[in-house]
Length: 283
Image 1: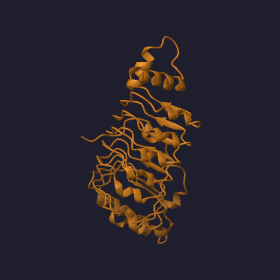
Image 2: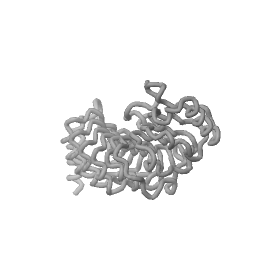
Image 3: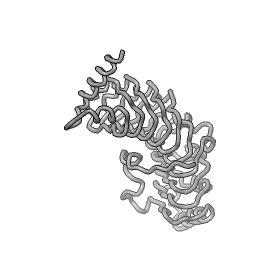
Image 4: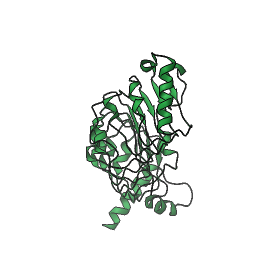
């Protein structure tokens, strides 16, 4: 059963929207038209016929909320497109689009993409900064996206994914990593090598523990862990001095601690201390 992206966490941490203000002369906007494959391709032909130079002028293509099962074949003719939004189409295949377009932003959320929908490898693309594949059917982490080494924003939430690749460390430039709404049970220690990370979304999973070296993410400002199975937190997490948002609700850790409190909940540091003392007394 397909798992959609039901909560704000998936889109709260994002770069500018594909629908933001831009020079309309450089935008193809076919959003919310519910067009089929042939109709979209015909529309793209019309854009080209209106102005011969349009093929090189277009920078953004907004095609979300149509009825595309695959990308329009003539889309690659607009070779200077840097932003492509193909969300909510029912796409079942994502081709090696980086072979033809030097994209900066690719948004393909809420489609029908599964593990075999992506090419085995993508052509090396150093320009891609944002990739959004949330709300699809990717039960395995797509290893091929690790070749996009300059990614800053990666969204893979709402997929039913069962693990995070141990090679996630290759995406050293990541600032936002959103993996909420999956079936994750653990977090690899290699995630602690993403030193540029500012927001980490792991809510609504089945995670029981976090690696201690998550404390190496010194730039981390937001850590969303609610709706997991966390019974403890690594004490080292108090080293995250820049963190301004920590969400822990609906975890056994919080349920147990809050049930013992009469008034205000403990501070984060107090929670670590209490958890540590509890663990020591149980030994």
